[in-house]
Image 1: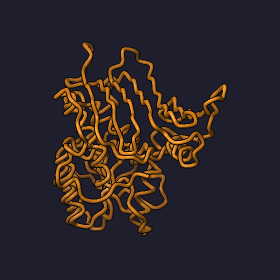
Image 2: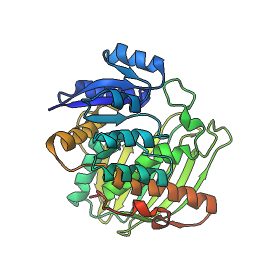
Image 3: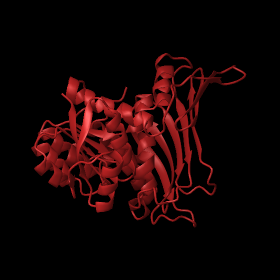
Length: 350
């Protein structure tokens, strides 16, 4: 058995998905869906001719032998797409964020769960070699256990570039929902703790091209007692990007200096950081392949679902709590922003 996929959404992420699926021996794309005729034509030219449709719903209605769906389209208007797949018993891999509102995301999760259909969220950063290596350092106790951490992400994201999606320019809280969601999910995943509360501020610099806030500063408290200080921006005043994720542990530090690599650690009295060997990495392909393989394992080999929609709700709650905290200028308990239908089930953090 192979995965016979409908690929819906042929923008930036959709093109990476097409590349990853075309390289997989366990899957093939059997139809493209996108409202843009030019995007459909470009996909056929680059990745091979396939039937084309203006929507995921139309593709699923016409293709009777599809057994998987990738939604790589913007995170709006997904209810009818998820319902169409759920009604046909078709597993879904959906790009993050699942929705731009926690209630909407919880609705999508419940639709899939009622139909007993796997819904996986595209959290590809969990599958980076550097993420896996960090998990190993912590699991082996190389520098002890982590009581506090600092996560810094600074980037000048030119939202007008032709190779970037345009919808973030006008959406509410674009940095939080489109970028920080990855980082918040990594904090939960790597530390194996659930967030309890946050105090956050979001704002926009004077030169920002985004209508809503592109800067985020937040202090999270986690259930295991860990405190994490987060700062992220899409509108840095310097075009050169900067990334640093430092974890201070009981016996030393773990330091990641690039979002795709450069992992080091030091014990308290070491004179220098020790580099950690990482596997080769093809940006946007290697980690997306890891994510896709996990999706295929669930469908073809009946392995447990990773990055489930249910688990994703807690990471989205961190986003929503930050927005509420900034708006109301107070600390927010994560539990307080979770809708009732988002509370059932268990998470998948380590």
